[in-house]
Amino acid sequence: MGVATTNAELRLLAAVGEIDEVPSHFQPCDDVSLGGVLLALPALLSCGLLKYAARFFTLPSGYYGLQHIFIMLAFMAMCRIRSIEKLASTAPGEWGKLLGLDRCPATKTMRAKIKLLGAGEVEDWASTLSKSWMTDAPETAGILYIDGHTRVYHGSQTNLPHHYVARQRLCMRATSDYWVNGFDGLPFFKVNCAVDPGMIRVIENEIVPQLEAQVPAQPSDDELHANPYRSKFRLVFDREGYSPAFFKRMNEKRIAMQTYRKYVKDEWEHSEFAPHTLKLTTGENAIMQLAERGSLIGSKADDKIWVREIRKLTESGRQIAIVSTEWEATPSAIAGPQFGRWYQENFFKYARERFNLDRLIDYQVESVDDTTRVINPRWRKLDAEVRKRAAQLGRKKRELGGLVLKEQPTGREIERHIENAAALGEQIEQDGQELDQLKAERKQAKKHIQIKDLPEEDSFQKLAHRSKHFIDILKIIAYRAETALADIIREPLGEHHRDEARAFIQKICTTEANLRPDLEADILNVEIHSLATPKDNRLLKTLCEEINNTQTLYPGTKMRLAFNPVSF
Image (spheres, rainbow, N blue to C red):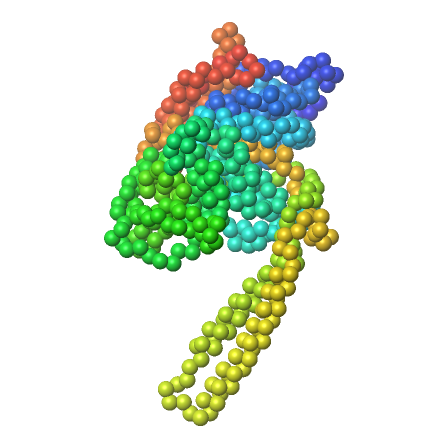
């Protein structure tokens, strides 16, 4: 029946449909590989791992139940098992001991279960979890970071459109996700875009409606009417979202916008800047030289809007401009979140490297709605050619302007100078005419067309994202759980070693442990093996004491989890 399948009787009953799922039952075990990951289970459950699972997902009767699959996937994320295929290179019986079974699901079984779960109500589950997280931490949901994350696609199933990948500085076939994170950097939800319409459209059409339904403690209509300067919540993003017209539309909804200002040409007097203390999410304080003015932005009459412009003066004398439609916050409360966007960037980097965020779960493709608007390939080629020719023309004009004679030129040098200038001027005139022709062709071509009108060689299908979305939500839960555990030990680690907290949690998750179930007292004692240093063991003891206070029951059983470090 396979490696480590010792529970033959229950497997047979599950195979003939006599039981819905096998209950977890723990046996005394020594030196269980990766047993320390059980220490993360209370945090995973607290972050909502199983809270709404039964409401939105079902699995057919079988040996492995819904909670077994959810817990197994969460444990894989915490132990950095980077893919389902990697599960085959681990000991299935060791995982089974952590699930209270004989072994974990095989790779083929796990893939089948994920496909079934991906067909469930993934979006509703994700939305419910997001709302729950915001309700639990309303102070982090009032200021929200939004940023796009490009996932490069190297497969051959479909010819995805090209996106600019900033981290690789290349245009590559990719798909885009837009993530919404709290002020502390913890993720709430994401929006997948097979065809990226741009940050502004995604925020306005996808993200804002969801936030209006989820963000807690929003002021009522009467409160907004009584105070014209108050907003529902604030969105912080990079320059891609800069648009006075967009700010104006969101201001009518009483949603504050904030980003870096584009097209800054003037400089403010240094005497306007004064030191301000900014409180960072980590609890630390930073002092910045800030100044503020009111600014009218927008090039068209209908798009003009008054905003607050906050500038930071760097040590090198450079001025960084921020614009915001949040009128009640202090300058430091505006500058802090804008310069704190690196929390979200850190999440992307960490999740890519440690949780394999960019990995595909399956290789299925789906049709894109025929009415979806995409960039016209002909317009894109013409636009690229126009930009190329314009750059070349600019260089030639600068070259012409830089032609100079010596102080005492000879007659031949004068003639050569005139000939060169005439030839270059003639070439500039010819290139200018060709550029004008290209611009006229670009103007005649439609910039956007529907996907059904794409030429056959440019048509594409989108990557199936439901299973990917499901796994990404589990990775969000794992990241939140890891953050909660790391926060417990950051203070004991000391100010100079706080960055080591996550590495310490990962070390514990991959540490061996002994399982000592006490069936009479309904306690599952987990004895985590000694770590490398006395300092690590003291941190482990602190963590165990804190987790034991939660009095967490192992899901599906009446057994309370009790953690203790054990030394040899």
